[in-house]
Amino acid sequence: MKDFIYSYPVKVYFGEKAAEKALPAELAKTGKTVMLAYGSGSIKKNGIYNEICTYLEEAGKEIIDFPGIMPNPTYKKVQEGAALAKEKGVDFILAAGGGSVIDCCKIIAAQAVTDKDIWEMEFKDHVFPSEFLPMGAVVTASGTGAEMNNGAVITNEETRQKAGVLGAYADFAVLDPACTMSLPARQVISGAFDTLSHSMETYLGSPRDINLSDEIGEAVMRNVIRNMRVLLDDIYDKEARSELMWASAMAENGILKIGKVTDFQAHQIEHQLGAYTDCNHGQGLAVIHPVLYRHIYKDNVKQFARMAEKVWEIPAEGKTQEELAEAGVKALADFIKETGLPSSFTEMGITDKGILKKVADTCNITAGCCKKLSREEILEILEECF
Ligand code: NZQ
Ligand code: ZN
Image (tube, rainbow, N blue to C red; front, side):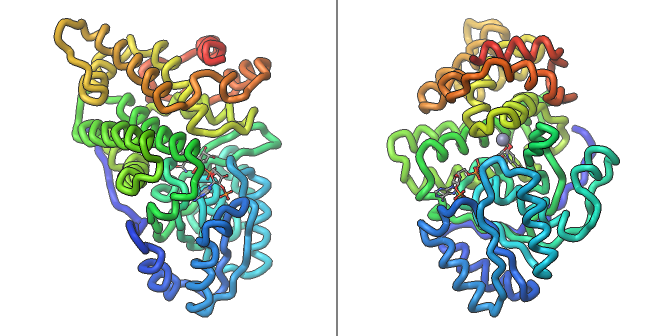
């Protein structure tokens, strides 16, 4: 186990009527001017917007509306939000949405209190912000676990990068599975796959000897697979939605990462695919994972074999470690098909093969992946994904 320090800044209100419990109590602690940030309007259709506004009005807040945060939020949108927050003297940001809205707000919270450019600060000077506007999150789409960490994935259209930027932690997160019920089935499944991906990418990092974090990770992965299968029968199953919502938070609240260097190579490739295609995150991962794993499992046979046995419940008897590991990768690919997630970029609607080299040339190569991939190998993987 690597040494670690663990503490957690996000207070979680989980379950039925969580907003009713959280918002009056938490808003009593904030300043008067609250920016309510959201996406393209789903919260207006499902009633969440009205409910939040009622709590804000009852708490005597001045509401600054900030709509239009797009999936795969752009740095331009961050700047728009930060400028509005500065102009209106915003005291607190309330994000209501999925990972995109929450991520955008994490960086608005940083940019709103400085005149320095956050992107340049982080990527050129390697200095990370330490002051933020406080923020809270009402989660309407689970999967990314964005509410549980201070990393935001932002698309910089000028530099053609989709990258992790460090921003604010939410002071509190409202996780009520009922808020996710209006989410389209495709997004429910791709979000849940994102959680599985986070767990796998953490599990397959180093050290390769099993530790407590990995054993908790196995439980999270089994839980996600089981509950995704429940949703394939009934997409509105409340218990499964609720399990997946907490699994999503568990995968990204740092517990599975304790004592580990994580892998996240699939994410790095997918993020750059997103920079060039604006594709759905969970779907991109679903295509990349099996192909990537076929390329690397021989470099981490022990952990891939263990995942096959403990997560995919494949009997080890009569198989070599390598056969077991390979069977686990096949089980993952079969599961992706079973869930209706895409298995190729073509199925995702990506038609321009020309972008693949750009993705391969610009994605990060991670230190935690069991095999240090070359750019040529990443291109090969991307071509196999087509
Ligand atoms: O625009 P709105 O109206 O919010 O509609 C959204 C959007 O169209 C819709 N939606 C959300 N809640 C809904 C709903 N529609 C109906 N009913 C509801 N209750 O769903 C669509 C997708 O939303 P989005 O927030 O983009 O999805 P997701 O939560 O999957 O977030 C994806 C973003 O998070 C990043 C991804 O890269 C991507 O940019 N990630 C963030 C991470 C983090 N901060 O830790 C980790 C992840 O690995 C990931 O990279
Ligand atoms: Zn992800």
